[in-house]
Length: 113
Length: 116
Image (cartoon, rainbow over all chains, first blue to last red; front, side, top):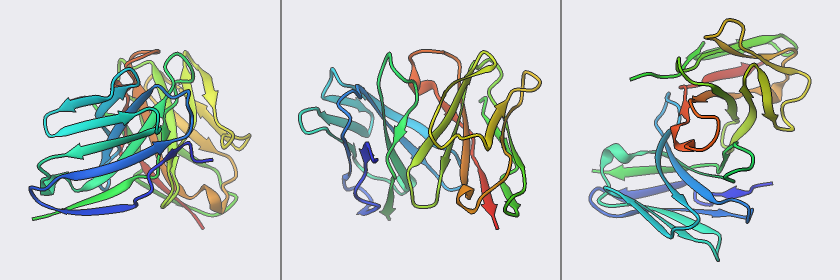
């Protein structure tokens, strides 16, 4: 039961261009969404989040967009840098409910110099 | 910067053996988790732990699994009789607040468990 889906296992972009990572969810009870970044041999680290009361949240080069009606969110990285190469996980949870995060499978981003 | 520490980084065991995965959460954190990721799959929640008891567990966390906080600093995951399908990367995580501020969840670098 994949409540959080990241359908692209990998993405390759050129340095300086935009990276767009996509995530879909099925559980309408989710009301908070996060993106985590994971380098090899390290644990996931928090990158950016968005509440369901918003449709956009921006932090420097990173912007997350939420389309609740489509149950879709995306992470935009612009401009992409080689150091952004990592696996990106989308995660969701329900505030006030279970405090566990539900993760997608991840998308491996490669930014080529 | 404080961090969640996990040992060992790699663990190889024979099927049917018991393993204990160890974690040292950040010192003033109160809420602890174990997650795992089977190769190529999603990161899956196993169990959460607060105030010396399990808060929530997934269907994966059956009787073969147990958690313990034996001494106020360590947080351990025990698998009594390992199966091949237990092979995965196991992540420990912790955070200070019981509710809210989920962004403040910090993960360790993981223990890669290989069951042969």
